[in-house]
Amino acid sequence: MISFLEGTVEQAGPLSCVLNCNGVGYRVEIPVTTAEKLPAAGKTVRLHVQPVYREDHQALYGFASVEERDFFHLVTSRVSGIGPKIGLNLLSRLSFAMLRSAIASGDAALIAKCPGIGKKTAERVCIELKDKISLPGESAAAGKSTAADTDPPPAEGADSSFADAVQALMTLGFKLDAADKAVRKARGELGADAGADALIKAALRSG
Image (tube, rainbow, N blue to C red):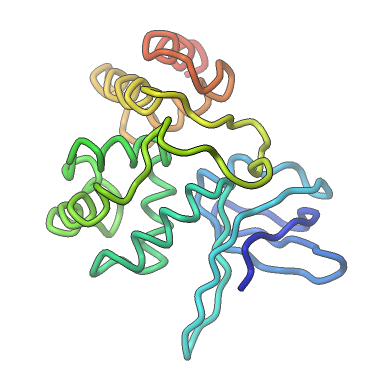
């Protein structure tokens, strides 16, 4: 089974890309959060891949980190009613840090804001995955660097700071996806250990 692909970016869009791996072009379905981290065309990138084989469809789903790939596999294989398309929607609408924080706190209402996820499905996500999602500090990051090579493993409490920053921006009038994107950008600039206050200030400056 394919675990990762490493090659040059031939084409890239918000939900898919084509990687040239030694002369073979692989189309990979990706979430928006991974698309944001892709380098320019012609640059080399590694994507952590989850193949999905069905009688009528075969696809490769790629992610910037091992943790995101493993989450995608968990949510699509363990939670009834969630297939690859909705799994990508989850990771496109919310960063993995926000999803992990929401699941840990049982915040089904936040997860239900993602396209294709109703209240009952969101509740199942929290119940089924709460004990299966590793929190920061519980395990070391595995494998080679992620797609953008800019996301270090989050420290203890990093998800909480991330979630607090997103919630603060929403209180100020940001929509969920815009707030999440702004805080992702801020954490990319400040580092994984940045506190909520620093993330909020950086997000507001850039927004």
